[in-house]
Length: 215
Ligand SMILES: C[S@@+](CC[C@H](N)C(=O)[O-])C[C@H]1O[C@@H](n2cnc3c(N)ncnc32)[C@H](O)[C@@H]1O
Image 1 (cartoon, rainbow, N blue to C red):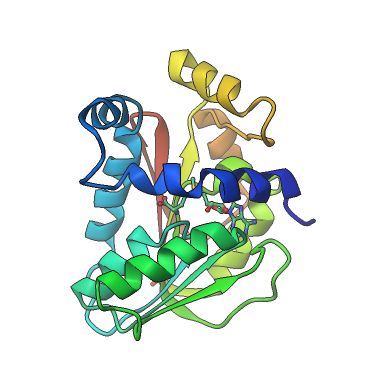
Image 2 (cartoon, rainbow, N blue to C red):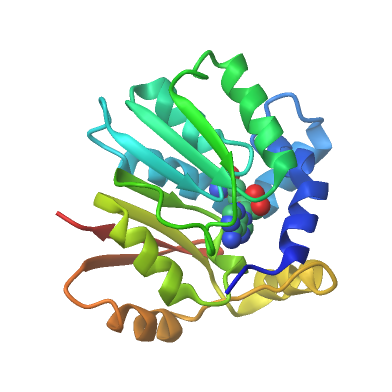
């Protein structure tokens, strides 16, 4: 089933704001807000970069790559090739500019498509799905699709339900796009439907960080 178009519209309008979370030239006040509210984004970024080891020459798919911060960092650190896909053209414009600025354009390819409806795009050593499951109605279908395109490791984040920050997040998205949140119990039920895979689940701040080992 295709993803809701309102998600794409929302991320087209929010692309620059989202990218600024990673920026070093952000004004001090915004940096403080980012540090408080976006701590999870930084933790999952660092954990993913650490998880994508060994990196030399590896192929990576970055699903819902947004402004390409993961793709670019991994290409810069030595990945062989990175395919970033996203259905927001605005996000991809920023990703291409960021890749150019970091001189990794020849290693990074960015494609505009909806991963939910797009046929599988080949095999990759590592897959990254960060900040995307929040907007996916059928998580099992998407996870199976990612697993079938990955030979070594896949990393996902899932937004945690419950508490003040979950409430704040629901309020923020209420009139923008659909949001799907997870309890540990819901994730357990989901992972039980993916048998014979080594799945690690770790709570990090406002998210669950999931590593799937396929070798
Ligand atoms: C919160 S951003 C995360 C971007 C990036 N992964 C990061 O963590 O920096 C979520 C991104 O997923 C993209 N996205 C959501 N659903 C998608 C889908 N079905 N197909 C492709 N991109 C999708 C959005 O356009 C957006 O750029």
